[in-house]
Length: 368
Image 1 (cartoon, rainbow, N blue to C red):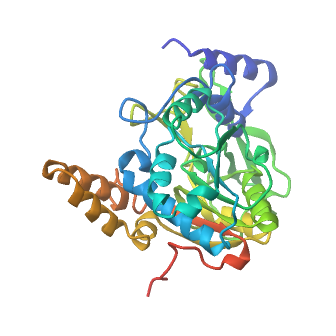
Image 2 (cartoon, rainbow, N blue to C red; image 1 turned 135 degrees about the horizontal axis):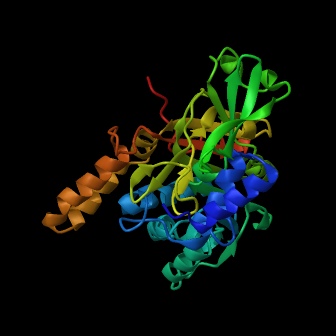
């Protein structure tokens, strides 16, 4: 197999500097300025590598828009609110959300849209899709560039793409997992030479008795802390929607997807998507440490159900031609279902807010 340009670059770096931490490998694969996956392509849709909830059904984005309007009301209806989307894809979710909130004209008039996007290819798609919108909008390469003021933040399938660290438990402690060159000069996973100092004191208590060979993943990204800090100081709320686990647990969740199928994470660097499951327990603990209030996490099916997905789907079905009914029902089933290709159980939703807002819309009622 002919190596990709990025694989050649990674081999060169490993040969010169030694094995590369998984986090660095993942970051290069996704974000390398010339060869990175997200910097060179639009990966979404049936012709791409994966499909997200907003691409499955317009109902998803519409409900997120109405959630944002309800949250804005709880915030005291500020006249100028920053509506921020992290990783907006093709702009599909935001277009659906803004269409839905036309029923709340005061909220729509208060919005200044801020889109945080590192991919030039996707930014171009977003600009084309939103060219006719009558809402002020700005693009940013990082969340830190969003100006001060009350804000509502939405991140759908973005946190899973943040580079992840991995450590492997050995008889005498935890060692960082790395990408190295095997005897045949192929990329391979290995472990570092040195134990990570005091790592047993850093992993969650429930993982300290993990068996030899167990893998623990964590993200050192400051984005959750930055979001929480802004919400505490300036007011507002955020949603994180992603696939992952509610409780911290050992396991290797690093995966690669190309053409809607799982592939080897070390093959074709820069040409396949790399992700890892979101640890919602760790994410919640990080934002709570800043003083933010957490709602959830709960499963996507329950969250959308609480927001009235069945009513919205029925309205959409009634307005559509009869031959579209099965298509609408199939899309809703994919959003809510529990099967292998469905999103209702695998995807979780976490709310983050200034404590004064209480439990956010969509997270009630609690299960009986």
